[in-house]
Image: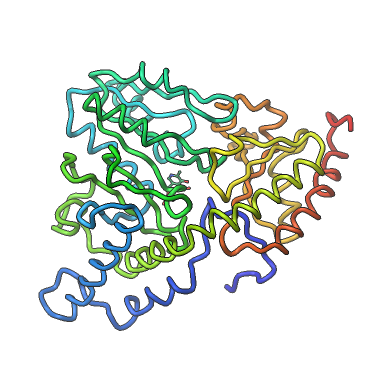
Length: 392
Ligand code: PLP
């Protein structure tokens, strides 16, 4: 099915368009170059070489050594691998530190480790303030001799808020505690240079940076003890069994190369578009507010609450104009639950229910932003007319 050419796609934190250059790079590995990278023959060797080159490109984007990159199937697998590796490395340690605003990939794993083991593990979930920022004193006090790992996201998928992971990793290392960061939303959007950082594990996912779905990486710092999650063949130097998803790995390598080239554009042109959209909506629509820190934020993300309207209803109306975004509430078993991230920030219910996340990419244009700016005030005003609580 062809994509609708009229779609205005502002849901890039959910997933991104696969870049045409990326499709071109991966195609040969879906067609003629189908060898197994582990084979002894040259036909397979060519494919093995392509994986090696992709590993180098991923490492370059992250300021890592190619030997520190493990290819996985997605960000979720990378998160699970890092956290489970730490608790298997230190079976005597029973404490995990994370935050209240993690993606379910980390949040649900930590909760499962707590509940499914009869509370063998204790999980500290650090609080955030109204702007979505952490309290570093609370963090410092939470670090104990019993802590096996700290897992804190680099940038939040809903608000784009950036956490001080460099400093947090340094504090963990000083106490001999492993540090993992879920950098799924950060990689490709902001510069990352792992060389001189105390981060032991970092997760990244291909489909958030213009590579296909179903491929990710886990960075494992040289010297960090590691226990594999997927046990099988000798692939990835025994760190992740299973025949490699070659085409997607090649694609991720190319996407990382492009991300390096486009990083400045992401932080200048895309940021300007995002800022213009955000300012225009906050000015033209009464009772609207920004969720998340004004500046310590990804350049592409704006999470805005429109009070007294339901996010899902807004999305449906936006959809009629071909505008794609996300809402901060999810329809669970018939009731609309505001997101755990906005609740942790203390966003009032009337605002949390009406939150919309706009997440842009290098493919967005001025014209698209103009159209969204033009349509949104009417959409919100029409929905508010139906609200019994709106006294505008
Ligand atoms: N972590 C964060 C912060 C995310 O935004 C996502 C996806 O939305 C994930 C993890 C999961 O990544 P994947 O979809 O590759 O499993």
